[in-house]
Length: 225
Image (tube, rainbow, N blue to C red; front, side):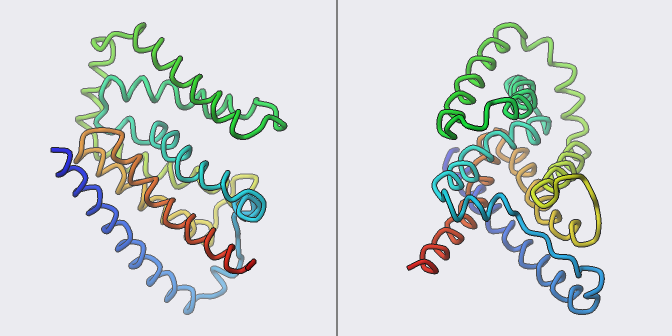
């Protein structure tokens, strides 16, 4: 069973990159034909800063931390188990409370605190909320799994606009930048449905981010050598 699910994970990873290739081919053609629509360039300044000053932190955040937290936030509502509902209840408060941790706290200490906090809150809520209490909402969400999948994928993409701008704006250039996130969110959601566990989209998310981050770090290292 685990081997079959691992095979499915690898297939979805390859499907995802196939979709990326199709999208960027179409995007390249559109950008050539209509340059005025995509004339404004955006970059992920925070990512560039981390790549330059602390690549280890970038790797940990992008390949370990983000896949776990973001999948808890966006994929737990897709055909959810009782544990998925509990993880969802933990994730959004955790995401916003993270902003109140003092900036001068070392990033590794901050991540350690978040992990302990998450484990503690999850354990407490699992004891306080019986499975029967979440049964109706789980059944409802499961019946409408495709609607939830599409909505969560769109939301996942929209949230990533903040990677490029400080305040929410929407234009053709930004839409083009978040479409790959929507595609990846959709594929991660499909994998959750297929493999029936939140761990698998977390793994796909980590693989997706990991490939890009490793290439960036290696390129930067070669550039500096």
